Image (cartoon, rainbow, N blue to C red; front, top):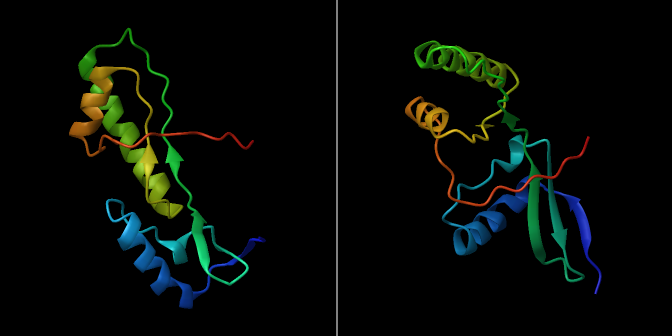
Amino acid sequence: MGLRIRALMPQDLQSIKKLHEKYFSQFELPPFPNCLNAFIIEDEHNEVVMAGAVEAVAEAMLVTNKAMSEIKIGKALVEAQQCVKFTCAINKIRDVYAFVDNDVYAKHLVQHGFKEQVNRTLKLRIL
């Protein structure tokens, strides 16, 4: 029972959309044509087992001087967010993540456009 991986082709998009609607409609359909790499894994009968893609995402990482006032830190977070948005826009990156262990920071980021995620986040460090 061999599997084969190949590049995703434009003609694959309709069948992928059907699989997505059937099994993963709670999620947004990945923008396969705009990803760094999009692929299909097929079985020995050329039936799609899985479609996948690698999309560039960003992580905002900040080191904050907590001795400063909350107002100053809040203003700095807004400035940092503008820099992050600019950086992502020029690099055509759709999503930026912030991993926060501070409820005040998290609340501030949500007030400024971040969305809390309900799904589990996993990380695989490559480099």
